[in-house]
Image (tube, rainbow, N blue to C red):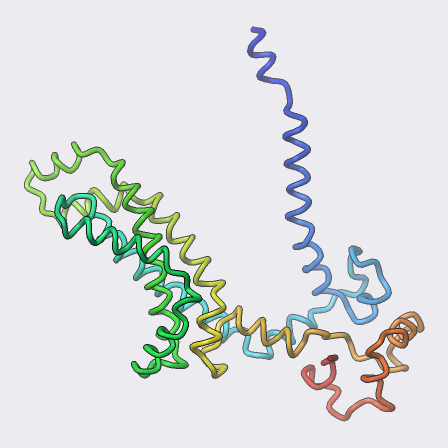
Length: 286
């Protein structure tokens, strides 16, 4: 009875730490969302963490008008194809490494593990040269192939350790029933490996989705640009996407704050440009 009462006591330190973690996690997301919905005057005059008084979708329209969907689709294609190929190859290789007791299987595992020790930055020059020689520069396969090559080693390592935990009796029972290696792989290995497959798929998808180095080195045109690289270009083009601030639109507090900035003198023209409706030409501040 005493032990039950002790176990029912609330864990106040754990709860406070959990609540703090929740605030730290949700805080940046909340700030980004409310800032994206603020109008021009709200951005400068209202509280930074306050709700927008005049919500607007101007920021979202600006993003959608600049081929955001194309960049999103490119990243999606690269991530899906890379993860599908990596999981298929790595699972079959792991099955062979676990079930085959031979020198070739052991050597294969060592070669896969060797790939983990090679950093991506050290392979930029040979990868670039190889992609150019294959005629794949500035294409989506130029991003998919290196992504597959660098994701397979860690994926094989995780899957091999997981497949070794499957009882050997299950493999032996399948063989006793006359099942072939492929039948054992499909009917036994894949169903039992679903947790590991989901784990490596999420891990590889995140790495592929957030990849920046290969898209920067191996692509050039906007048609094959991925989402992280496009965000980087947005940072250069819209880094100071401050609202157009002409005297007839801007509040006195906003004009005062802009006049005191060091860059105000460089961007405060005598009159608005003719292309004020173009978001690219109006709101770019160095």
